[in-house]
Amino acid sequence: MAAEATVLSVEGPHGTREVRISSPGRVMWPELGITKLDLARYLVEVGEAFIAANGDRPLALQRFSDTIDGEQFFSKNPPKGAPDFIRSVMVTYPSARSHPQLVLDEPAAAVWAAQMNTVVFHPWPSRADNSDNPDQLRIDLDPQPGTDFDDAVPAALELRNVLREAGLTAFLKTSGNRGLHVYAPIEPVREFLDVRHAVITAARELERRMPEKVTTSWWKEERGQKVFVDFNQANRDRTIAGAYSPRALPHAPVSCPIEWEELGSVSPRDFTLLTVPDRLRSVGDPWARFHERPGSIDTLLAWWQRDLDSGLGELPFPPDYPKMPGEPPRVQPSRAKKNGKD
Image (tube, rainbow, N blue to C red; front, top):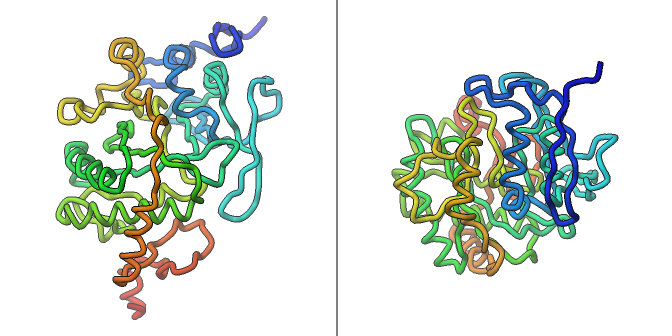
């Protein structure tokens, strides 16, 4: 007996593709009864905006073997048997090792990823043909314990001012959880370390303006009840959930682009697999003009040099990174004190 399956017709730049969805009735979000087929249909409905935001980029797929509460793993390169409209590009990782990474170019590719049990899509901030030079500056505002989305709102608004003063146009989306992601389109002429330094500089400037509300402290024990500006998401092979990507949380949220004017009147819980398609149809895509006017990070890098000259240096890298030039000791401050190394 043939396995249960459904075929979806997906429109795209090369016409209509038929994408087979096996086990369409499998429930992936148990709390709401949202199925694998529901996920695939969601990606059909938001496909154009989804690909505009995440397409033509190296991408990692966060896949689940059953429900969102079950085993999960990441896929970076196309599996055997992938359709011919799925491609890959060679990228270089922090270890200096090169490897092919998935690239999605059309809505049918996103639907195929849903067939592969993908829930969260993690695009690089660079294009497939220029993967070493990001064309997006990304800043993750992450509320720490004791804070919430409402605390991230004023931080995002002030960060917008910081970026504007540096000559950049900021765009905004919910993280899909409690935080906010602030992006700025940039010219793809600087490599990842430069963009990281630009992000650190913007984060430090935001911290100066909101010292009681915002922190750049990498170590959790030093953050307190503040919004953490996660500068390490700007590193090579570090990604955050893409625009219009679902998240693996019980209420099926989506990391959703919003207008700046909406801050203060929306909740991240407003944006789910069940609500975002209608939102796109009614209000359109707030990121539709994202790449029209890319900016330069030269001003931020001048601020970086100013901070270096005043004694501020590099910040810690992620634990799996090789030791980087100028990096401070990669050890928790409390442990360093205990060992007499402070």
